[in-house]
Amino acid sequence: MNVPTKAEIKESLLRSSYPLEGRLEKLLSARDFYVVPHEVYRDLHSGKPTELKLYAISASKVGKGRNYIFPVMLIECINNSVPIAFFVKEQDTTTRLLDRGAIKLAGLPMVVSGVKGGSVSLPEHLKMEEYHHYWKGRVATQFCSFMRRKDFSKSDAWTAFHKDPHFDSFRRLIDAAECQIDALLSNMVALKFKKTRKGRVETLGVEFYYPVLVVQGELLEVHSEKDTVSVKPVKHIQFQYRPMQKPIIRGEADRTSADTNLYRIDVMTEAFFSQYITMVKREMGTTARRLAKDKEMLKKSLAELPGLISEALGYGSSPRAAFTLSGSARGR
Image (cartoon, rainbow, N blue to C red; front, side, top):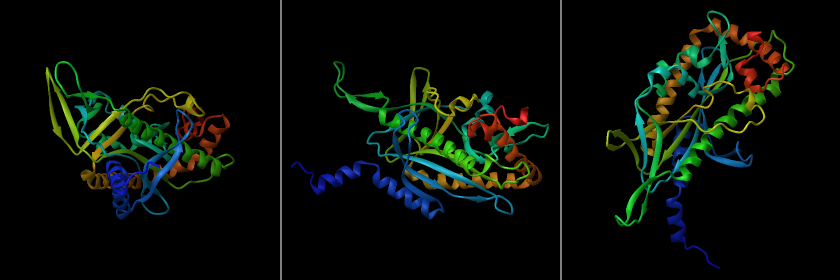
């Protein structure tokens, strides 16, 4: 039987991302996150079970009572033997407000009562573009890795190309976020809202999802400048990703918002990860304080939501559409 030696096993493990995952798990636990390694969820394309490297959740209290928001990190890890390069550019100021769709969240409330009637999304009400890191710095929309390829002109030349495992990591992060949102809202419907009374008042509880890719190797930022490029090592890059529209599955037809298909994925080195945790906690602290200041608005919105959600479900809306009040009773 051909069995690897202990030295070969050790070498193989060191080339994998397992040691990196273990170090991140310990760091998150030390920073007050509850961590689930290798969480299994359903692949939205194949329908088969797959797994996320790390799921981590913490909590920030909002004012008095049992009101909380929850930062949730969805983490993939790569031990890249060669650098991963991202082509960055300045953020488009014309889409600044539309980019609120990159903030993925689920819970109560996802929308609040607007000042002029109707409803607005929670990121819009909070003006999260004023303090969230998604609106700071440059953003990348393209990436590549490198491999050696012999050709007739130059032996052993390095070639830039897209590596499938990296695409798979981004897809897993997006699928994991979508599954988390659907599962949370579906569970809330099953537990609370199918036969709820309109007079019932809920407590605030919203999860904010942060898709994260941590690389153990080198991370590069690339700027295109006319006929040349400049390259420099960095610790953190925002990658904006718009995947192809997924096949329509149960509940998918209700996702009519133009910004639903926009994602921001934070790509970083292991050295930056502790700083990233601090940044997330700071953003959630600001979110909690802004929510606590709007006590009366929040109370009004939470009092209205159970009846509106129940009515939307009665019209046959999916849980996601019901919680975002898309075409629901508020506009009728």
